[in-house]
Image (cartoon, rainbow, N blue to C red; front, side, top):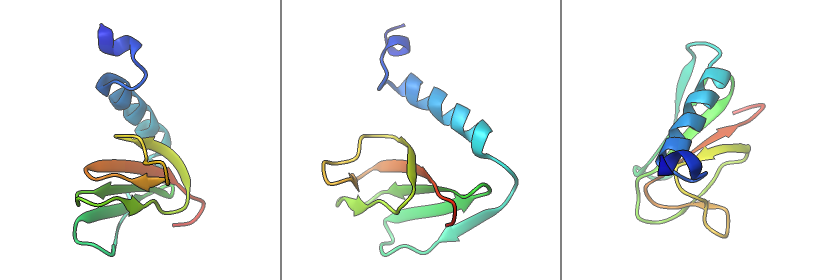
Length: 93
């Protein structure tokens, strides 16, 4: 019950992710992206939405696009912290 009223709870994150996923999925297209680090995983799905996960210990620059969701807040400089995933939407990826 406590998670249901907190905007930054795990429950809220999952609800938002499920809603976005239903909205964004427009087909089966899937493409892996090469990244500067082997500790960063990025892929694009149909509809031009990008998922990027930073498994490394250092923050990384978030690619351009409309930020849709993060598993933890971005840092003050707009960087993706360690152990964090972001979903972004772009007209072209």
